[in-house]
Amino acid sequence: MGINQEDISSYKFRAGLVTFLVIVYAGVILYFLAKFEIFNKSPVKRHIFIQKIPAQRGEIRDRTGFKIATNLLGYNVYQRGPVPQEYVPFLKKHGFKINNDPNFWQKTPRLLTVATNIPAALKDSIYQIKGLTFRKAWFRYYNLPYIFEPIIGFVQRSSNSGLGGLEFLFDSYLKGKAGKIAYLLVNKRDSTGLNLMKLPFPDSTILRPERGCDLTLTIDQRFQTIAYEALKESVIDWHAKRGAVIIENPHTGEILAFAIYPSYNPAKYSKTPAYLRKVWPITDPYEPGSIFKAITYGTALENGISPKLMIDTDHGEIRVDKYTISDVHPLGRIPMEEALIHSSNVGTIKLAFMLGKRKIYNSIKRAGIGEKTGVELPGENPGHITSYIKWNRSRFANVVIGYGFLLNSLHIVTIYGAIANGGKIVYPRIVKMIDCHDSTKTFAPRYGKILFSRETTRKLTDILTKVVERGTGRLARIDSLEIAGKTGTANKLDPRTKRYNTRTRIVSFVGFFPARSPKYLIYVVVDEPHKKGIEAYGGTVAAPIFKEVAKSIMNLEF
Image 1 (tube, helix red, strand yellow):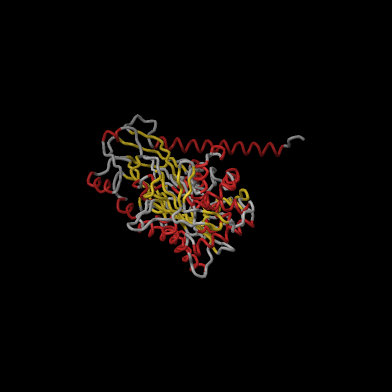
Image 2 (tube, rainbow, N blue to C red):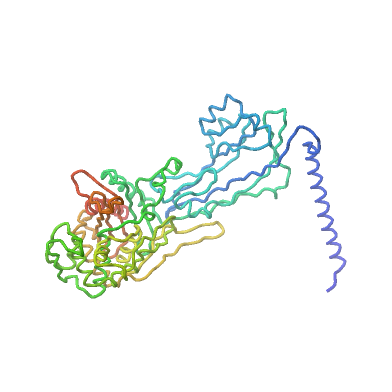
């Protein structure tokens, strides 16, 4: 195909136009360079300064749209020359890092960042001070700050980077992309400061900031507030080290609340000790104690053992190798289900010895102990359990009553979630959706193995309802609401003596309701509670917290 004359003319026209525009643009640049005496040997120093334009971070919202973390408009402050001395004390009082060294400003022209994200009111009061310049910026603001920490995390103001919790884990989505703008800095030696001007470049030299993606959580701020307030009151009352409440939908794995106390204010993260900034229920694994006994009883039911099987708990003691393991109260000869209802260590160990190590271990591995649940939070510890091949008789006895291995709180939530939903492992999740404006990513339920059959979970649920009705979980009982649950009390290992200390315990309660068609699962764990004259057990500390939270949820629902 040949090239016609019309194409050639069009090409020549476009080429000529481009050449003309280049000449015009070059002329404009040369004009301004001459205007600013770039070619003159004057005492004027000029430098190009590229400044970042911070992007607005994406918001973090609960499942209803409530803004947990959002942004407010503020200002970054830059020093471009010496500041009048009479203003320096006031500025330093507000945290401004002023540098008034004359030698510093006689060197290369610069913009010195002296404050970030100051509110508009403060900016208005100092706007006329010589030597300062301002640029709009967004800073992070948290609604209900203590209630959502440390799950949400915090943002470092100077870098706009997330440094904890979800702010850290999803920083690449939330942060957005910073823009850039070019300035010409002109420093006259006979002046006390810098004259700041935009370079006369076209708009294409300015990279506009791109807002970050929004994060929607599975959490409901109403449930979160309920859980936090109930937990806070109890932790203070029991003089406990710390505590947590997790509320989950056992069918989808959606975490509706993840409250931790004590917590912190993310606006004051620099003054917060590191131990408060971590999500300890998943970062600090622990021995769960009696709450883990459901694994042994579920394994027994799965293998055809009747809940009515009689077990002789003797006088509440059993000798295993060189160790004696006891019950809180002697129960004598009782049906298997009564051993779980009253949390008998002796009955549980005897039942486990009937089943054998391998069957118990297989149930434990199906439950995911020793593996991460994959929840969207930083620092999850998978826990640890050794292979049954390495268990001696005493280690086996310890494991079935919740000792001799480590797990995190979400492992317990996952196990009881499977019992509640008919046997399916559904991994917990806390993020529902990421909205990046031009695309949306949704998080679907994640399923694991079948822990127990539907028939086994039905029988196990029957027994767990009796735990609440007349067993160790009586203080969780609510009239007109059938609850299935289990208590847990674990003495903690003293790292100095290598022995279990009955004065330092981690206590817990987990339950789901309505028991026959569960909508909610609540797990409560309290670390090292102690109160003069009252023994701390899962049934006396954690069960009442469960009850208060469950009643408040019922009031919302009905």
